[in-house]
Length: 125
Image (cartoon, rainbow, N blue to C red; front, side, top):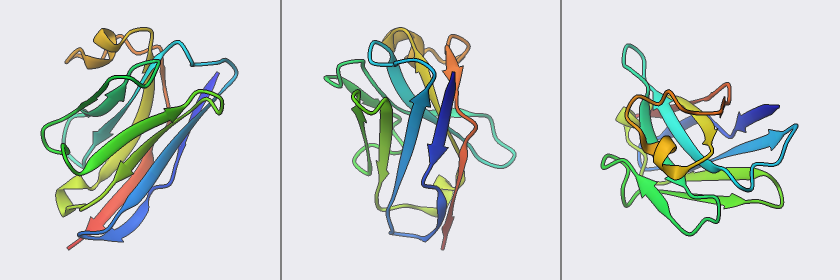
C-alpha cells in the first residue's frame, strides 16, 4: 500500500499550486483523506481533510479561503488546490488516510492508517 504525493515546487507569493496524492495497493474510497504539512523546525500540522464521499471538508484556519480539497475515488486520489500562497505556506506537505473523518481531525494525528512521503512546497517572497 502506498500514497504518492506530487505537485510540489517553487512558486512566488500569490501564486498557486495543485498537489495530488494517489493511492495504490488498495482502494481508499471508504477512507477520509487529508493533507498535513511540516515547516522547517516546526511540528507537523493539519491543513485540510475530506470525508470519504467528498461531502464534507475541513480546513485549518490558516488556509481557509485559500486552499480547497477534493477527491476522485475512481482514481484513488486526493487533491489540494493552493492559491494566494504565502511564504509561511512553505513546508513539506504530506497526505494521509484514516477510516473516519473524526480520526483525521484528532490533534495528535496518531490514528492515520497510511501516510505519504511528502512533497516540498516552497513559496518565495
